[in-house]
Amino acid sequence: MTAKQHAPAAIRNREPIAGVLSRELPASGTVLETAAGTGEHAVFFAERFPALQWQPTDPSPEALASIAAYREEYAGSNLLAPLLLDACAPDIWPVGEAAAILCINMVHISPWEATLGLFRGAARLLGRDGGPLVLYGPYLEQGVEIAASNLEFDASLKARNAAWGLREAEALDALAATHGMQRTARYALPANNIMLIYRSI
Image (tube, rainbow, N blue to C red; front, side, top):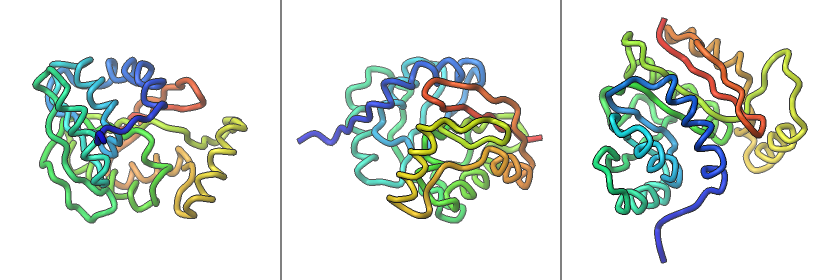
């Protein structure tokens, strides 16, 4: 039995996400990917952006094993060994700096405390150098009609765990402001997902 896991959504959304990353990521440095899940994104993006070091992390032992299994088959040298990172844990991060932080589909599939920890850690790691915190997923936005599929997804998440659910983009903006960050870009992507970019002010 292989440790490799598979997420069909990772195959569908990786190209649109990569298109945004090509505009927002720095030319060099380490990209810290939180909640890297299966590791399929990490392998794909490491290959797509060979000048960047890619550091996948996840709080799940099963996910870390899957990431490691995919990494064993990766021919490049810029995909680093996965590290344990639980955004809910107060200020316990296994890295001391990053040029960018990428978070795909975590904010709605975790308690709000994880998002609080994500922004707290991002403000500390990215500092004033202007590195981006990049979020991808479905979000609620004031003045934007909510897709029926997103409403159904939100209900299904809350049925699984009352602490989960789609978050308001404006709540993220307010949280970012408490850490000296602001939203600098918004990108609409397929399947009613968006990417939000935050940088230090």
